[in-house]
Length: 545
Ligand code: GLN
Image 1 (tube, rainbow, N blue to C red):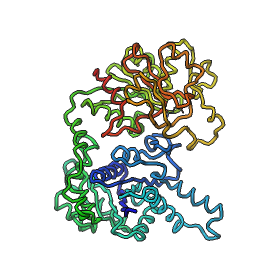
Image 2: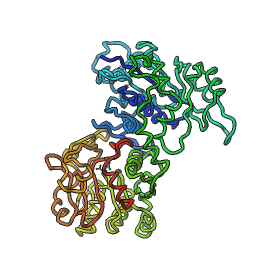
Image 3: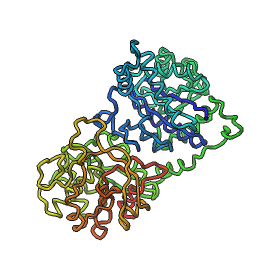
Image 4: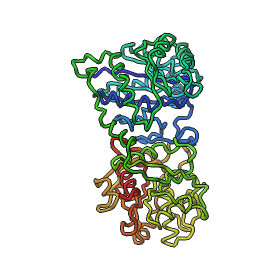
């Protein structure tokens, strides 16, 4: 069994410093040097998972292959690395307590008092160790501790990783602290005090960081690094700047590499002299990342995509979707611009005007009736004017409803989610969902196989007959109406292997250049180095290619 090393990343002073992207970029660099990595997120909230939270609270709910509803940072981990993430990669305080309390109810603590130390901290440590046990050839487990050092909620996690070092030895564990080094006035003096304070806070928890990643809008010079080093008790060669980016987050692996961050990490773990295999001067295979960044630096064209959804005020609410659209532009060197349209504000008077610049229209997934009529107007506009349309989950269901009402003449056709008594319930509840009461984790979740119809547009995009895509929904296309749709030109070109569930629809190619709806969420599987074929085709068609 290989020796696994552990890298913990904490954050100081403020949230939204980019911990997720930073750790994902470190993962990408370690992979580029031939190591096998996985990344785990520890979320201090008491919810079991973010599945029941509003996207306005924590951004999108990311879904893994095995159907876990997780924090959106797992999306970054998967986009930046080849790690296969699952349920075990996403841990919350709620899960930890749930496990410990269930164990207590079963009498497994044999009469002892159950306490934060050692019972909660042991369970946290078990979750970290579990990843290495599941994948014996793992070189690195990277663990992101959510929240900010100093928060009450993070304390048990910090205590657990402090103990973890004691158990595993300093040579096998590394603590990285991400902390801001801001300038208060524009272009003014750079301040190291917030970093000093947050390192002190960490030290109070018994953790001395081994490496500092300083979020700054400038490059730190040697004097500043020396100052930070002195006050924070971290060698100056291990003080790194994580500067603001010019174009894209996909530059970050290269930025880190140009500062030798990956080399320093290997040096820390004494991996540089492993028979020459991971020589420090070995240039990681960064060329692919470079080609991605190149598209941002000098795109050949740009294309405007209208995203018509409910949570437009928060980019994170559809994070994977925007990323996947952006990736879709890479193969054709197309820069994708978003026209974000709040579907609640779309009405029969204004929709043409709102959509006048849209070269492609996308309706994302969602729940609840608010804004549905606006989405239907946008979809009708795309369908009638042959503007490329891509509907995802609720976006597919809405495309079905719009087609039923406008083309099939099914007045008041609807989803039973919104209108239980609709005369034409073209979208309805899956049989096994009708008796479910609990909200958390009870949808159809995770990857399922889907058969694509030979000769369809969608099969042509994927270039394979069977695909596996991730789901997160309760409602389905109502099979009663299959022939009505087929006969009128909306083809059901993706089906579950036993043909009971409609997974994808498309308009006949004679009627429309690109009009596709998927019950699943393809955006979760798109990566910058391997853009998703449906997004690629959608962007190409929208750009008129
Ligand atoms: N609300 C719809 C359903 O549950 C769509 C879900 C989604 O778009 N993720 O089926």
